[in-house]
Length: 169
View 1 (spheres, rainbow, N blue to C red):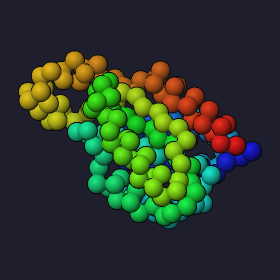
View 2 (view 1 turned 60 degrees about the horizontal axis):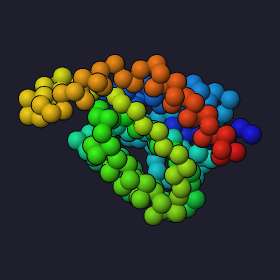
View 3 (view 1 turned 60 degrees about the vertical axis):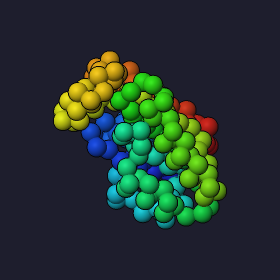
């Protein structure tokens, strides 16, 4: 069965956009639309069988643009799958905002059917320099994120997308 899928995302570094395009590539047998959250009307969600919603986690939070999108979602049944990039492997730095996203969605009588996360390099040199200077304990995490998402991360993401669609048929 061919699903109608929306892949919508917010990105600051370009990592989430790369991830969104890999999902589109993996799901080429379905009817897939890819667009940034800023170009997505929350009211159009009902037109899709499944929505992949992507974001990075920035300073243990999500952006105002994504919060506004989530708050604007209409009541009603919808299925979401999250794909998330974060620069720190420790869930203490990224899990809480994802739980808040899920709570907002479930309060709208929608369902989060799957979640994917992976490390993503922070490509903002000023932010990286500031973090290293002010929080030197984060240096190992910052350095471990360099080059991510890598080919293995993106292959795992593609497998996640296919599996999620198969389970939603």
